[in-house]
Length: 208
Image (cartoon, rainbow, N blue to C red):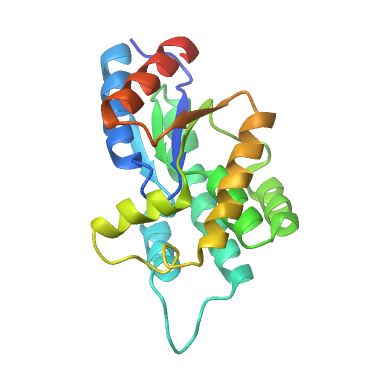
């Protein structure tokens, strides 16, 4: 049975934290407990326009490198499209939404990693107006371990190729945000996969 409105659940984490397998696990949990598969989104992306923006921010352009401020603005343009055209309508209709990243990623990566927290807060307030997930599962992992795992998947994209200090700053921001927001739950993603999944399911059973 679904309720109106639905709930918005987000999976966050650094590269190599295991978001893909966690998303599959949470998808199956939601479907089992609501009787309906959730609407799945990814950021940046999730709408035709937002997917074009994803290509811009993920792939390097040697002749016209993306500056940090432009990157931040593009992420929020894609997010605004996704929230307005997919997430909010789905929630209003009673559907649950499962997100692969949301605003917390911009706070951590552009705010903490890039040092643009003032810009992030300003744009976030203007585009989201306080809208946020009901629950965020942050998969925490040491950046070195995460990037090692990510490299095994294949070539790293533009953001995955940032210097290691960038990811340490992003991780510190993720953890600081979690300390101040009880809707963000930290999951130790360095554990064996079966233990990580057990922790996720325990969290879902308690929070939802």
